[in-house]
Structures are given as C-alpha cells and as structure tokens.
Image (tube, rainbow, N blue to C red):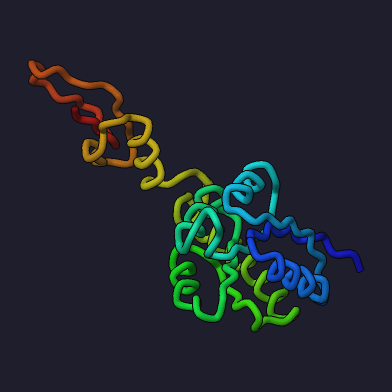
Length: 198
C-alpha cells in the first residue's frame, strides 16, 4: 500500500541528532516521510516561506535562536503547521513551556523509538487539524460560513486605523455608514448595527 509522504522540516544544528532522527523516521511503520534538514532557524524560516510542509520538528537551542523564541518565530512564519519540539533530557520544562506557546508535542532526544516518533507526528498533525477546525467554527457562522461578529469587528477595526473603542453595536439588522454633523439635531430614523465615532 502506498502512503502519501508526510513532509517534515527538521531544524536541528546537531548533525548526530539529525542523523539519528532520520534513521528513526525510516523505521516508522505505516508512513512515509520526506524530510528537509536545516541547521539554523533563519534557514528554516526561508524553507517555510517557500515550501509546503506537514510538520516542523525543531530543536529549541540553535546557533541563531534560543529557547521559546524559536517556537514563536516558527509559528509566526507558519502558524497553521504543527510544531514538535526536539529537546535534551535537561530541557523538558522548556519543552512544556513551548507547548504552552503552541507546539503540539515534544520528543526527548535519546529517549524515543520509531513508534513514538511516528505517533507523535501523526497526533501533532491531527491535533492541529482539529484545533484549526474548532477555531474556524468559533469565528464563523455555522449556517453561512461567513465570519461572525467578533471577526467582522476585528477586521473593521484593522481597516479603520484609530477606531479602537469607537465601534458600537446596537442591532444586527442594519449598518449605517453615514455620519451626522455636530450641528445636526435630528437622529437617523434607521437603526444602525454599527456606529463609528471619531
């Protein structure tokens, strides 16, 4: 049976650790992997900007990035791609912090086998898919698929710089785009869903 390959970007500056992980990936049952390995975060971000990957596996301590900022930079470049942290035995606390910042899982170097690696990758991809699905449902109307009110207001606020705190909702039925002068004493008879005040 042919499996569609899972594309992995591995950001790991230790050649020995990268080689070991590649060997483990070869022995994973029921999956095929295509892995690109880079030794710097900057190179990894370049690859993410150009290529399509299913998962990123990254060490936290790289020559050009240290600690949580590594994960934050990867997620900023490719927020929809799951990230698995590769960590040493003395860095588990940092790895857990990385998961709190959006990493899907972490693997302790030297304490993994092919089954664990394969399971971690599959679960990370599936968890990220479910996370994205839940986020979509939270921000879009179930019936129409259109962005819901919080998304609409956020986008409107971004499109109208300086409008923070000046958008008010009174009714979901109508939108008023007209403004009244300071000297006007007559209010519009049409109820407005959104009013914008300077």
